Length: 260
Image: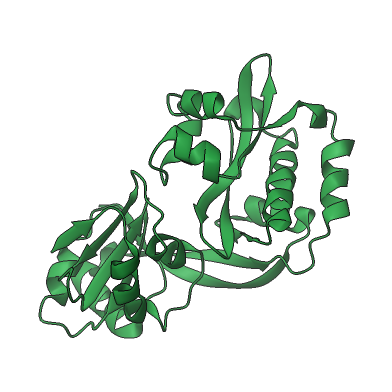
């Protein structure tokens, strides 16, 4: 097996057919095949010159593609680093995954949303009507570099090569109080069609509505660049925030999580 940390144009074109029929519940496949790279991103393939199977990893999430009957498909399953949440993959792959991990698998429901009805004026209202809306700011290079050392905000940078890469391409908005970065919304993933929304508010500043303000700002940036602000919720709290921002429910799906 070969591990690739950044997919170039040539390899991306070879890998595309392996994932062509997938239910793409987030932007993981497209972003990484278009070349997004970072500490948490890697692609494991059987053959770089002529890939027949592949595993795309981005943080905890993974997705399997190619011919699940391939002679080394079992080896690819064995190569999965744990913990891992396998996103919807073709049935032959899921069967192979389940035969390996069996009762260790925890199926977790996640919730999809559509951005089609989001109204920019509504987002502006969320920002301007919040008492801390005037503390909203873009994440510049200096702030991104400081985030890399922070307990909570360092996770925003996991899918980027560097703080500079994040500051340039992360579409990030934050709120700062007394020199402390309280809440940030950024693009966990980005590709030519959209960004994957990611929000972290540090515990001391939660339940103040800050997540809605930074999210509204980041969504507006994405829409201004003709990019889809993709929202995928792991829980009811995230779902409620999505609806407040103007998203509408679009179904759910299951991930198969293995703790280790």
